[in-house]
Length: 354
Image 1 (cartoon, helix red, strand yellow):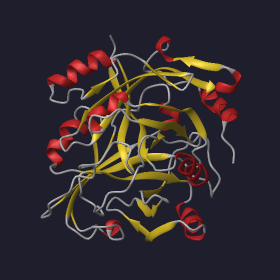
Image 2 (image 1 turned 45 degrees about the vertical axis):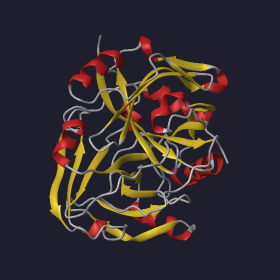
Image 3 (image 1 turned 180 degrees about the vertical axis):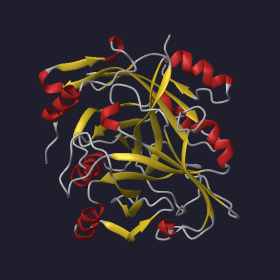
Image 4 (image 1 turned 135 degrees about the vertical axis):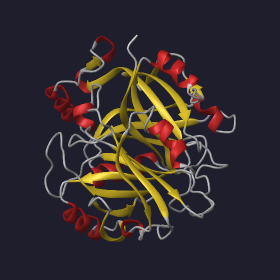
């Protein structure tokens, strides 16, 4: 059985109000393509919800300009809340997500003038990667970066989708054993220790850090590779600092970046291999879940060395144009071959419009 981890598929985002949050992501990040949207029990997540089976509303959304997806999750059986403490860069977990723009300076003007909380100005990283930071209405931190590759070229003031995350870790070498050696983000774009100008506007960003930026040396695979494009994982370790765990004593679904999702094939065989390497499944649906009425997936979870949740998803059936009854049975396709561009572009007919 062929098994592989193709790369980042989506970023999970916990929000208190599903409709309002998704509308904000549509209007500000262009996330107007929906693969599924529905309410269901989250029995899989009991280990992360203090033994209780919660109900949640979840939507998997994307942007046809390019980038990975977002899964917007809002608990129904309890109210998602922020933590009682403010977290700093270097705390353990997904600290921020990056979203790409075709014109960084136009994006900066857009967010500065539409009421979004913008943190400081545009700064450059040690490898010359320019960006700035914003907070969404729920206080989640997003890094807006200059995009270089697009599936459908956007206009100057439009946005692309997410292109990566920044994750706080306690020991970069231990974390690399998962993110680089197993998950395939093996190309080191940056490995540097110091105080960094591009961090100075965010909470705790004035400390001394070791930071390692990773991407894939191999071209991403899977059906949505042409849409997702190149993605990045930045590991950040704060030196001389005792980090807090971002989801300590909190529930999956509380406000924050709840997990990082990867597209995989051959889940059973992959699970056996991960277990031998010390990253066995903590949750497993054991079979295909039906998400909404037209999406079938197999979901599992593993944890990084600091407990950050990694979701592995094997997709079996997804909608292309749901309202016309056009679906794709992924099981019958070559798992390494991207979907034809015309098929991906056809998803525009199912856009959610405000």
